[in-house]
Image (cartoon, rainbow, N blue to C red; front, side, top):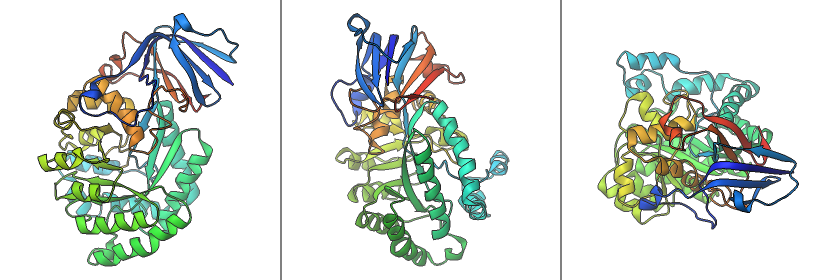
Length: 411
């Protein structure tokens, strides 16, 4: 199957040679070709260039992209798409003045979602979750990480991970699975943290690894949740069983968590609403990708990740949606990119790099996704006619996507 896209006004994120990520001043550069073509063969990007050099071939489908922008699909490296029900009443509680911590302490938040999930059948959970997955596909996401973490028992966590695996088998979007049993302490372990860590390390992680249900392990490393020491033990157990760490950290406080994550070889550290100078220095010499979740900050009115400070210090940065029922009930990466520009003062070039090539790195997919490179997966967005790609974050409330191709298939 060959698809030839012609007369592209702007072909974005063109990388002739494989790169893993962009950092610092390089994030301001977004290579593009004007008046371009793109050739797809089966599920792979086969060729691209200017229309002056467009090959005369017999394609199965020709798409005329006159006036339109073409770019790689978004890579959303942090989501909680698989969940039961929603938490709209907590949304109203926050409007009425309750904090995230106050809602959690009275049985809301993660524990609320855990109760709903434990009561939900696996088939019901799949049915609810696939609707959300289909929505983000239409919105241009071509690869997504999905976490467990609303089960908090072995049985319920396995249920979530099986649903993630089923979604991955049914849809053309690329899915990576993360075990987040350390999302919160269940009520029965409220005063026995060591007992729950023992359960995670000695039973849950080995079982999940044995069944091949996750690639990554995560924990909510935060004051009042999982300590640096507890998270370190979880990361070590994950590594011993082949699960790479991707950790929630520095959402509300900075307690040395980033250094611990880097020391344990974490692929990414996510949230980072609070970042110290020491954290930046630790990240400079690491292979760990910082990941900002700006629409979480937007929704629950907490500080934004200091993107400008981090990029200007030479760091890379990825952005992701944090799609979840409590603090970010949206997986729209177009709005994530816009919010990155509007609230974190990232340039459109930086935000698109953060949502494509750097997001792919944060999922371990930089060799397959995140750029227009020959040999990478043919997962692309074709916009509606635009004055320029700057309209993508500028017109934040408009649907500017015309077509989405995932792994060579028009969805």
